[in-house]
Length: 95
Ligand SMILES: [Zn+2]
Image 1 (cartoon, rainbow, N blue to C red):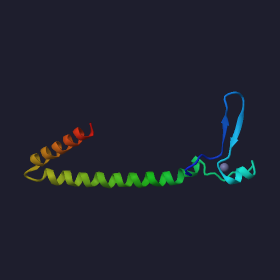
Image 2 (image 1 turned 90 degrees about the horizontal axis):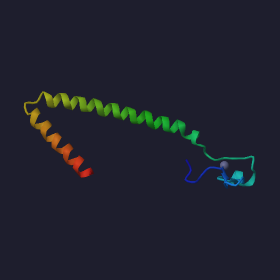
Image 3 (image 1 turned 120 degrees about the horizontal axis):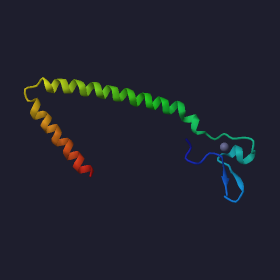
Image 4 (image 1 turned 90 degrees about the vertical axis):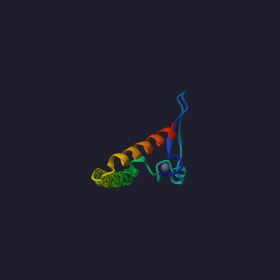
């Protein structure tokens, strides 16, 4: 999305409605508009969501593998106690 507003109508609240051009095309011809619209972003957003979900799945699988490995370790209780301490410290730091 552009860093400026696309062409839009501004309502002055008193019955007046004014076209605010967001692109040069519209400024030159009220029938034209080359602004990127919010729905133009949909394919990119869907791609980013799919990538984020794939990354989440990989991370969950990695966590599951680590969890299984720790549970199989003789020091599992101490490792989880340490992880709980780290999580508590992070929560405290975020407050
Ligand atoms: Zn436009």
